[in-house]
Length: 190
Image 1 (tube, helix red, strand yellow):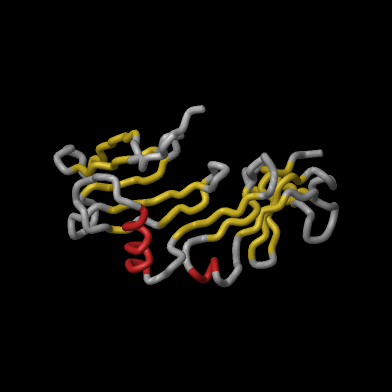
Image 2: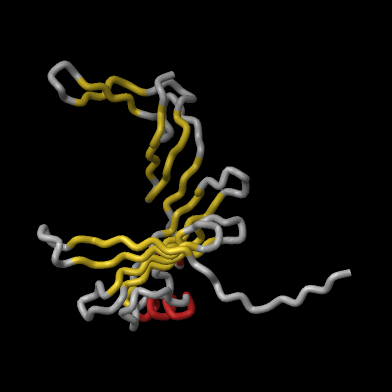
C-alpha cells in the first residue's frame, strides 16, 4: 500500500503574449497576456498598463466542475502594472468595487445533458441576475401560425428583401425568448 501526501500546488499557467499596436507607426503599443489553465482553457486576460492610470486591466473567466465556462467577469483595472497573473481573490472584489455591483459577470446556465447547450444567459449586472431576466434559449419546433411561426424572406429581383410567407411547420430548430418575444436563429426550408 502506498500513501500519498497532498501538497499545496502552485498553479502553472501557459501564457500567450500579443502586442496591440495603438498607432500606424508602431511606436505606441500595449501588451495583452492570456493565461491558460492546465486544461488549455483561457482563465485570465491581462492588458498591461492599459488603464488611464497605467494599471493592468484584467478579465477573469471561471469554469464549473464539468469544464464549461461558468462566469466571465467584466474587465477591471487592478493595482498592478506588471502584466502578471492576478489571483481571482483579488479580481472579484476589485470588480465588485469598480462596477458597484456584486454581479459584474456573465453567467450561462447549461441544460442537464452531455450536449452542454446554454439554456439561459445572464448578462452582467444585478438587474439580470437578481431580477431573474436571462435570455432563454430553447430548442423548439416552429408552427405554421402563432408565436412560433417562422417568417420566410427572399430577395426580390430589384434587390429588396420581401416576406414571401412562412416556413413549413416543424423546420425551426432553435429559438430565443427575451421580453416575451421569440426569435428563431436557424430555420431551414422544409
